[in-house]
Length: 199
Image (tube, rainbow, N blue to C red; front, top):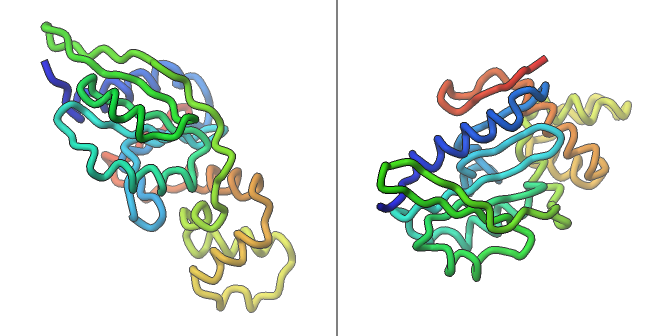
């Protein structure tokens, strides 16, 4: 039997909730926009890092994957692709060696089984400007104002603030701040968010 996106997504979501459900301040976001909507990662796990999960079921094509790889590589600390068995060999040749790989298969009973083939490694090439694009203008201003800059900074456009932040804030601080802002947001679509133990 072939796998589909909905079944794999549910299985991954359930496994993340089971694994991280007791950790405070963990956020799971479905279809998170990346780089101003250039792509959407299927599932993002935000806790002490940002983990992306991209799903390619047996019913999906791999046509968009090369472009998605380039975009996701800019912002996620770790990335795992969850692929149907029919795509495994091709997926393994397309993704970077530091991406994790899980293979989803469907048993005769209809149960989805996910097998880890390779664990993800840390992304060493996050792009600060792309990461800053997660931030709304008020979040950008709040971050910059921590450094006692002049109030004229508020007159900058969001694009100018992205550039300013990416050039003047350390990458580690920016990463932590982006995670903090994502967890605090209330304006997620109801079907996009699942917050776990948000203390």
